[in-house]
Length: 111
Image (cartoon, rainbow, N blue to C red; front, side, top):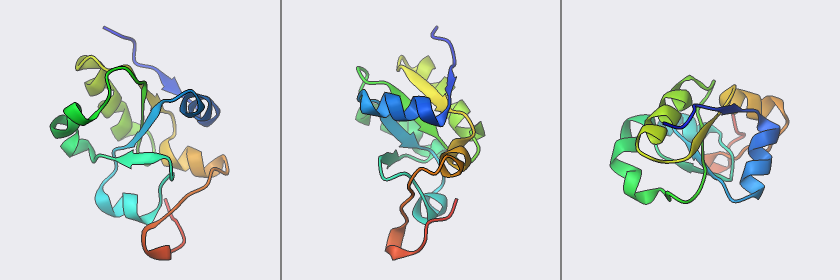
């Protein structure tokens, strides 16, 4: 089985430039409050129902608020045959690195 790997924000930005897919596994209210514009939203609990929506030939980068839930999502995806990595530190690290955030309804984004 593939090794569980954690990557930092700089590595994620490189991976996204190379075509990786960023999946945000936080709950709906967290997603709506603030997220990366590059991310797709699939809440952790719903991930098993959306496996068919994910490309097997593309690296998946998982993210949550702090990195704990996305680590579980990364492990699950690897078990299902996907190539996946976890953003260490989650959206908190993304925000700390000065990366842009978007939110629903024109509100200021919060993590």
